[in-house]
Image 1 (tube, rainbow, N blue to C red):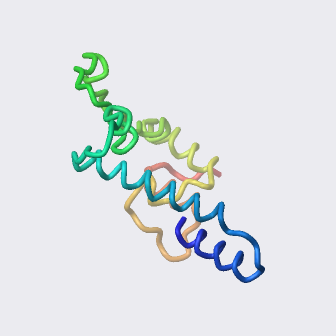
Image 2: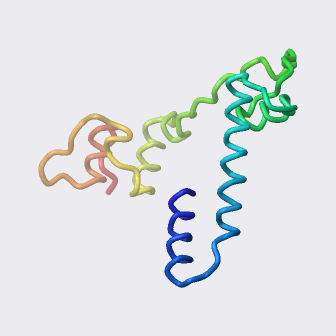
Length: 134
């Protein structure tokens, strides 16, 4: 924000426009910053400062310490990703599923590499142990 104000003041001076409002805005921002800093450091000399409101604004935490609800305090177990259903199919059905879904990579369902020049359908049948369909 400071660089914007500085650029604005430079422009106002260059074009001969009044910058009284900009200076007032800077003064107010400086006073607010000093007030918030005083609340955080505990230096409240110089008048009344609404401590509770200022503390909530400054650090983002409520001033009063209340016990959280028992329901909110209990942590929910993290959900784990379930394995795709096709991985638990019998080999014959898994082979058909893999043949029908060309976007499933070989590494998703096996660590075995393809032989040089081996087509996908032959590879699936070789790994899952089923003879090639005619």
